[in-house]
Image (cartoon, rainbow, N blue to C red; front, side, top):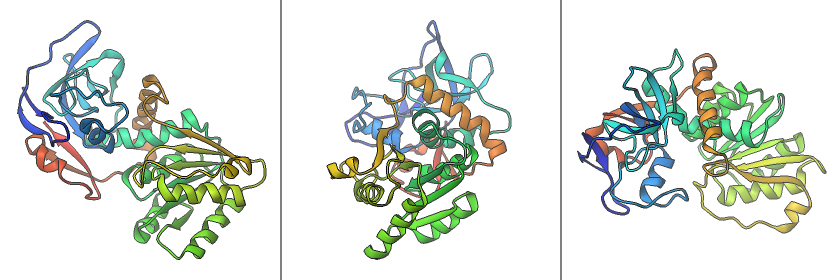
Amino acid sequence: MKAAMIVEPGSSPVYGDFDDPVSAPGKSVIRVTATSISHLTRSRASGSHYSSAGTLPLIPGIDGTGVTENGHRVYFAAPERPYGAMAERCLVDNDHWFVLPEGIDEVTAAALAIPGMSSWAALVERAKLRAGETVLINGATGTSGRLAVQIAKHLGAGKVIATGRRAQSLDDLRAVGADATVQWAQDRDALEAAVRHEFEQGIDIILDYLWGTSAETLIVAAAKAGPEGVPIRYVQIGAISGPDITLPAAALRASGLQLMGSGIGGIPLPGLMKAIRGVLEAAPSGGFKIATRTLPLSQVTQAWAIQYSGSRIVLLP
């Protein structure tokens, strides 16, 4: 079969021939119809993600949509190594796929699943969002953060605060559910005043896609301006701005801050699959929006080189 392959550590995938997967008890061969290039797909393929196996050669791609041998239109995740989703076919444990809901097409489902899961799982499985609570999305102008705004509102958040660097993108988020915005690229005094104001109003949950200096700013503001003794559930999801922070001990003693993470390992795979199913089932009625750009799998090397285009790249075998 044709597939994208990583043959050297740190290299981009190349298009070529790979052995076909063979059916096994409890597993299904799925004909892939669409798979997206997500941050998680990239980091696992490069070996930099904590869940990477590091064995080469491999076919990248952690999830996608496809058709089973019985003709079911499905979403699948975690294909059996070395058969990733960026191929004509892959082998998937029967617990790792489910029939696609009506009303959502294969390309949209493949694009939505992972970025949508990141906030759905964080809000439902980790933060235990309650209706009417206030949620701050740190890094809301990216694909995952933009979906997080929509999903938080769909799940019952009373107020959603979006943070990011790009002013125009923040303004656009109001159309999909953001009630307030904080722009990181502004004068230090103005920034501290804006962040402090939001914490004085009350924030129950923070979903953080950035980490780095913005996380330090939020944590210090929570300690200084958050209501005394009121829990603030801080869920770390991504680290686009940097993998490490300086965490003042006093910030934990002086606040109700509860630090936790959400991701592979922090939530068992059945919980992540449940979150993805929730996202895809809610997408049609919730009107979740994600921009997509489709390319043939044969152009995977060129597609891999596109770092940010404003759209989720979806490969079609």
